[in-house]
Amino acid sequence: MRIKTLATLVILGIAASSTGAAAEYSHEKHVKEYKGTRTCIKCHRDEAENFFHSQHYQWQGATPDLVNTDGERFGKLSMVNDFCTNPSGPQWIGEVKNAEGKVLAKGCSKCHAGLGKVPGDEVTKQELENIDCLICHTSGYRRDLYATEDGGWEWKPILWKNQEGMNSVARRISQPTRTMCLRCHAASGGGPNFKRGDIEYALKDPPRDFDVHMSADGHDMDCVACHGGDKHRVRGRGSDLAATDSPENPLSCSGECHSETPHEVAAIDSHTDRVYCTTCHIPTFAKDEPTDMRRDWSDIHFSEEKGKYTYAVELQQNVVPEYAWFNGASFSQVPGKAVTHDDEGNVIISLPDGSRADPDARIHAFKVHAGRLPILDDRKWLVPIATEEFYAHGDIDRAVREAAHLFYGLDDIQYSWSDTIRYMGIFHEVTPKEDALGCLDCHRPGGRMDWQALGYDGDPLEERLQASR
Image (cartoon, rainbow, N blue to C red; front, side, top):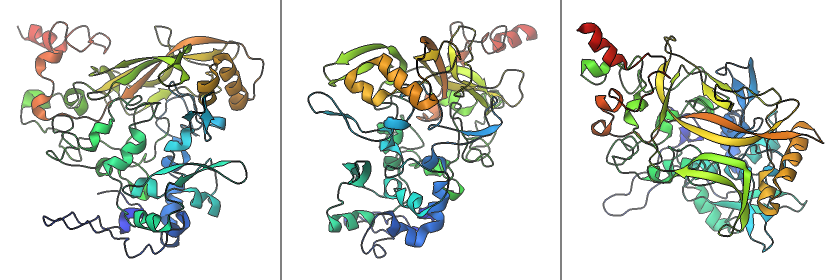
């Protein structure tokens, strides 16, 4: 494993033997009494400080791979997205209830690796004790939202009043497992698999034909096998992520686990310098649970089933990716800057950089998410929405105006609804080689590649065949 985290000092629990012996964990004898994160910091202050600076805690970072910035810090906390729009302000933490008293939302910090405070800029004792080490490093750990004496909110273990039970849970330290990562990454965007499309709960224990890397019948890899980096800095970056946590240590299939010519068939290996691995090895995504392909915040209705107001959404399953050139850099819409439109008039939320003429670009597979969001009429800025409270009151105009005030400090705004588009790289749910795309999936009339959109006059194979005649 490449990851160097708190778990660097951890020996993974010994697997249960055939006699049914319970697993052993390296911290069983070290955690006498768990008193929150300060218990971890006694031995792991350096790890805590490293984590403080990571994107998992800050939810933003440097942007060296964005073509429209000069490396400024941006990320989830500071940008507007086309799902839940932005997690700051009242979106961050707190209970929202409907008229019947049903809790509709608890805030975006539910999936932050902290205990409720918005991350600050400087390392302090308070900041370090706000880190929730157990959410990523402890099997069976669960937490919930509780009111504080000063009228605020905080995330606490559900066993916080049960010291013996809390001690038992805190001793089950390990490197992050698939289940731990999926706690947040499979449910982002408002529902199971809504956002990414290729990160589903099924990856906890998938069959081999679902994901050959993560299946116990395949390579049985955990997420950190690929994404683990130094000092809690995760490796890898999707095209739609603004910040890069490990710019000096990028992640790629080829050159690490696989060679540049892994197929032993020259005709196939000739593709690898222009076609990325997952383009052929992920024929479809959202194979178990449907994913959100279009979200329209201007089309509001009340859901009797959910007991709340909600947006119009289009969910799709077994989705065929779209394909585009990607060189590792991308464009992301920056808040407080006039929006950019594509050739069809959509506001671009995120777009991969690259072209056929770019020697560093390869054809990648993408989920292309469509949305509909408010844009300021005068400044042409993208505006977030106060979504958490909206679920209860259903007044979308009020939710837009509240967010414009909190995010930009603007009042009395005039805005219009615009269609948006976001390209999201597809990298998970890799199928075995026998299920990968074949030649005719792309190289035939009506195949899945739009060759002209990729910069070709037509199918390049057909052009070569004609030239050889």
